[in-house]
Image 1: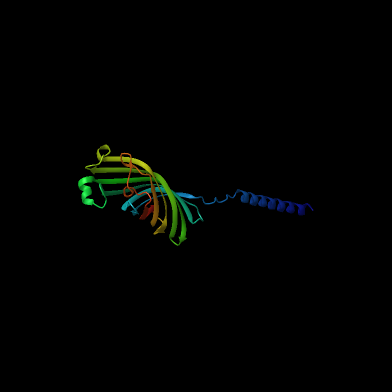
Image 2: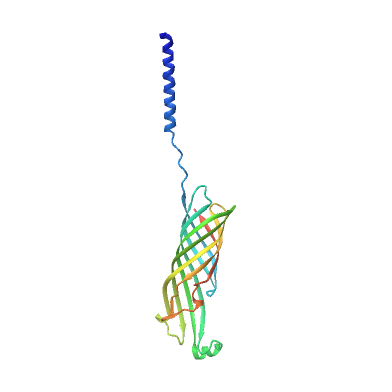
Length: 226
């Protein structure tokens, strides 16, 4: 009897120890953490055209960060952008706009060089369309540095012919991007521009063609992802 019980107790002890070790190993096994969303840096620029009263080229440079989550085909980006556009033109004024020669003789002419530097903080939402092609929408707001050099014989000029101002600037935009590779993409889109009017003359509003307010900004650009 004793001979039979001893092997049974030994087998039971071994089985219990093995089971306990198995349970401990199962509990101690670390769980894999779910992939987290990642931020990455990007930089780029564009060349474009302001279609409207301003009717001039515009160039931009930007730097920002983009947030992507595993399993999602959408991304969110925040970036700072600086632009540059300029216009060289002249305005005739006097007795009648139909008498340009008489206007110059008896009225006057204003020659002006205007530079505008928009500086904006922007948000962009991007969504996969098909393959490497994506669509995006966004908006941005900030300021525009407005600098004008004015010359004319019969015009009361401000600060000896120089006018500087800082005004509110904003835009909304949409377009398409194409991923050439993981690190490089090209894009094209359109923006609607809003800009407050600076004072071009003393206390007088500027003409429509001396501001890009209400113009469409058509652009093509490229971006590097780091």
